[in-house]
Amino acid sequence: MDAPASSLAASPKRVDVVLDTNALLDWLIFQSPSCFAFGNAVESGSVRLLTSPSLRGELRHVLARGVVSRWATDFSSLWAILDQYTIELPDPPMAHGSLSLRCTDPDDQKFIDFAIAHQAKWLLTRDCAVLKLRKKALAFGLLIASPDAWSPML
Image (cartoon, rainbow, N blue to C red; front, side):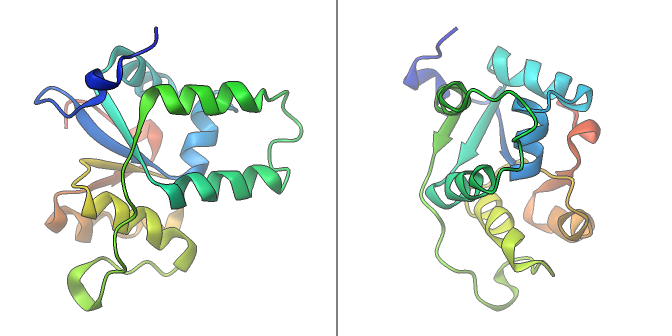
């Protein structure tokens, strides 16, 4: 099931997606039914997950806080899955003025800036502050949605 690195390269059939930390936890740790369709698309190779050093750092920070302590979590397996299905790209430079969408939660800004900088098609989140930017994100070619609203057809 390991995808060769070359198969993670962008292709016309593959959709680039950014997951915020909560959507990632819903998919890989909590195994939320709302993420099944998305997870299947990732495993089939029709979705390419994009990440960066700061996005992975955010996940490390959240995991260190013990958010998933009630779940039997194999952290080495979690990181192995992420390594298998994600492509790590550089963090974008800080956006200035109206060049980017502004989120009311500064902790979430990195997900928006990263998705726009790398021209992701989707940013999946459950965060209300990010979801409020759905309409404005369309001007950047970015679809912001919760994992259960994700559809490969859009």
